[in-house]
Length: 376
Ligand code: OSB
Ligand code: MG
Image (tube, rainbow, N blue to C red; front, side):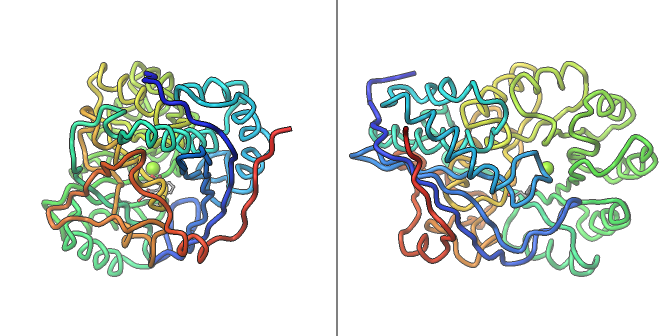
């Protein structure tokens, strides 16, 4: 894929940021009030590249967590990337880091930063490099567990008024079928889905049978992330497609899950699979097997939102993603705000690289700590 540009790797910096959320985001595994993220900056001499690490504050969504990712980047992955010298081909990032097991979110941040810098040298946008075919993409919204059904219904009403084309409701045991039934009743024509983040077991079959009656687009990650076989058994009992999120960490996982019948839809997140290049391979496997995909989110700042939108422009992305506007998450984003258009779509950044960068005064305003990666 190389076309000749060579990205110098003069230095690598990590910046931890904390952005207040407009409202707490609650899922079956906890509540977040502020978004903390690690932003990675590659100094390539003539250009700068940025990437975001989506590891959460605590290791609940996956084994990775922010403080762990910080160390992994600083002491293992960052030095390993720098030690290989200049980058001629973005695929090289994955090759240099392959010896490290796991740590996909940390690896994805480095790959994104290198891609951003390298594509800026090429004068080319990430979406064009990945094979995007749309300049705007339909957007959905992921709605956290609310304190009451009334609050939830109001929140949904606000998102629909803004134009969001699909609503995903977080569920957990005790706050599931009643809530979803009410939402279905109040919004009979809205494309609705639910996301359990693995909070249920096969013993909850009656609950899934009840959800199966509510005309949902999909049920996301109902069971434990390690249990593909149980997902296959559950899918065989339901008309509603199961969508896998946490269970899919690679294109290989996607192939296996599809062959087993563990899902009929896949949520692609570049951080979860180790980078946008692997995300494209997941996309390709799903396109080959006729499985619709959409692009998920991890409450990214603008730095991580941009690559998600680039991916959402790929031809096999068949459904609105969790690619919501900056103001759904933050009082103020770290980049220029991503804005939802009245038709419920968002523009795919088309400038060189990821097409956005942190604004320096905003970065300073939300930065908690910084560090330089050293090469020994
Ligand atoms: O399961 O999709 C998920 C956020 C953090 C961790 C996991 C998930 C989510 C979301 C939010 O659903 C998606 C977004 O709007 O970024
Ligand atoms: Mg999910």
